[in-house]
Length: 187
Image (cartoon, rainbow, N blue to C red):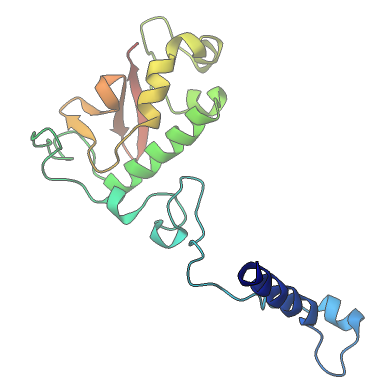
């Protein structure tokens, strides 16, 4: 009991005695000045994480992509070798991966209005406009298609001369000029 109580008492005293007001400074001037966090950092405190669970240190410019995700494997886990990005029509791989992260977040939030803006129309023969896409979102973007987007392995993106795809070919992507587009959704 003493082993548990002693650290709690020590931390309580530390926080109770912590006064961020400098000598000669009133509480009014101290309130106007920015506070410096003097809370001790413990060695076993986990690093701050972003919304994808990656440490912020590992993220690329706050995008949620790690250095590992930005690196492509030369051989996939099944032993196959990916086609070149150039053969798949991509000239900006980093931009494409950032686009995929955006699509992933939009799908996770069911933001059909923003997703509709990322589609190259017509799609699935009957969907010719953004309005068609929004109206038929749950049919077009089936649960399986949404899961395939959620499970994208950024370092092992399948690609060929038709573009790049999510897991099992559910969603296909292409680069159009400087933009990226969803070009097919297979249910």
